[in-house]
Length: 300
Image (tube, rainbow, N blue to C red; front, side):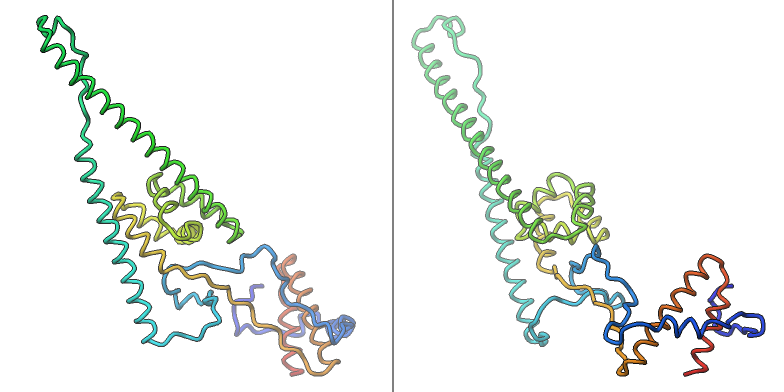
């Protein structure tokens, strides 16, 4: 019998409830100072969540982890202006870097070294041969200098990235989210190597950002479609300012009975109902539960 109809009529003559009240009294040997817990605490359940922007009002699962009083609209406007100003500053800095990079690329156009001159190619003209050899040697030195510079830059970038990667790992350990690996794997599968590198290199807290994106597949998919590295960096920088860490709402505690005797009987009733629920799961018959609840209502 299914417990999905509140108007279900129960024929008490066909249900055996003779021993329910006696069992309730037997089960009432519960200390008044030690009320039964209705639900065991799950030690493995994550007690924190990271949200992007304002949480969904329908969910109501998270509270912002802050002891500060609620911000007034004026304070919020000031905060938003400060964030906007910071983003504008970052924007100008990136534009300047891109401009300088473009200029340096223009200056450092590939140099064609060419074949080493020979006397025969100079038609055995000693003066021309000497000029060609001097010019070729100058080009060779320039090519070698550029190659050495690129090697140094690559080494510095590698070293910088390794340092950032270490910071990422340290922050990941510091946050200690229990399901971080799952969130991280989702980000790795969705983002390209370039996009992952931008997050590690440019974010203030890349670990927190990765976790937030891993827990928000919709936003993750949206960002993965941005192939322009500069635009991607701007979007990620803006997104990072919207991260919020909060605690999951704890379940409301049980109301403790004032009377010692009442507290004991209340605990016994819970145990009896729990036993009947388990029995109904095995047999599929919930008639005893209906009858038991009816006796409680009659007593109340």
